[in-house]
Structures are given as structure tokens and as C-alpha cells.
Image (cartoon, rainbow, N blue to C red):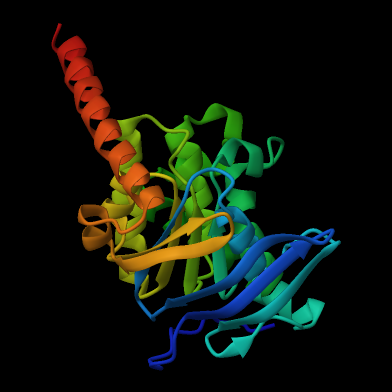
Length: 282
């Protein structure tokens, strides 16, 4: 293990390159001929309805597929092939080169472990740091996500949903990974908290010089976070391009439905925010 966190490479290589990825489970096709690129320091979206294959693709990148799943094709992470890589190589990649933020932090945070210890876990796993240096990094990361140092000794159930997601972000970013995968990270949050978390995530990713794969079913969220995107349906990539262009001029019926839903959600959220502001002024 290394004793220091390496700075990001200045290489022009892609952060992630997926080519012709097929995933089958019990003979059924789950992902078919998926190809995707994420450049260094890029924020790229993956959007699709529930069951379209988005989360299965993220699990494929992390090599966390079900035991009976079969994958074929190529997944290259900073030019290193992951399909067929050893368990040791994959374990080294998870949490160090790639950080993962999940949809529901309440289900991913250990309910009986204090926040400080949870954020420190990736550091303990991947880096041989002295205890005082590890604590310093954890405390600094907690402060960067907008939480006070006093929360180091808090348990997840003592935090709000937004605070729990901030802890999840801190845990994913504490090792300075070069690629962040965020899978529906704000779905369970109210619209105001959601906006704060999205802005925080974008700022932290950009400051770190990392790349981001942001997975969602909501074009409104995607437009706020990413500059380019891929649309997935039934395990296939059906459209990709500049996020604002895809949203403004969708070329497939699936993308048009997703875009329409984003406009409806935007309208509903605007009314909800106005109502909340009115309540606060009473």
C-alpha cells in the first residue's frame, strides 16, 4: 500500500472507455453492445427509466455483477482493462481509483458505526497512514462537505437525509479517486436539499480534477450537473450527445418522454419551493 495520496495524472487518456459491453444473466441479455466514453475531468450523465440497465452498467464498471452474470467486451479505466482483471486488482480499484455514491445513504451507511470511522474506512483499506494523519484527512473532508467536526462522533440515524448524503460523498471522495460514479444520489431528497447536494458534488469533483459519471432518470438534474450524456433503454445506449442538445432536441421517443418528465418535475418543484417559502414567511 502507498503511504501518500497521489496527485491526478495529467495524461490525456480517457478516464473510462467501454466498448461493446454485453452482460447476460441466465441466458438473458441485460446489457447489449454498450459503448461509452468519459474524458478526464469530464462530467458525463447516464439517463434512463427504471429498469433500463443504468445501475447494472455501474455495477459492471465496478465488477460487482451477480456471481452468475457473464460479461464480454471491454471496460478500460485509465487505460487499464477491467474485464478479466484479478480480484486483487479490482479490490484495489474500488474506493481508490473509483469512488461510488449510492442513491440511499441510509441503506449504505453502517447504523452502528460513527461517522468518522465510516469516512476513514477507505483510507484504512487503501493507505498505510498514521492515525493522526488519517483523522486529519477525515476531519478536513467532513468540513469540505459542509459538516462540523463534531459530527465525527455522530451515528447515521442522528443525521438528516441531506447530512447522510454529505457523509456518503465524503466517504467516496476521501481517497481522492480519479472517477466518481454517482447513482441517483439525490432521488430521496427534497428539491431544495437536492440542489444543495448537486452543487456540492459538482464543486468537489471539479476541485479534485476528477471525472464524474452521474446516473439518473431525471433530465432536469442531469442538465444541472453534466455537459454530455448517454440515454439508455432496455440495456442499450440509444442516444448520446451534449446534454442541453439532447434535452432540447431528443431524437427518440424514450428520450422525449424523459425530457417531458423533466419539464413537469421542474414545474412541480417550482410550486413546491414557492409554497415552502410562503410557509416560512408566515
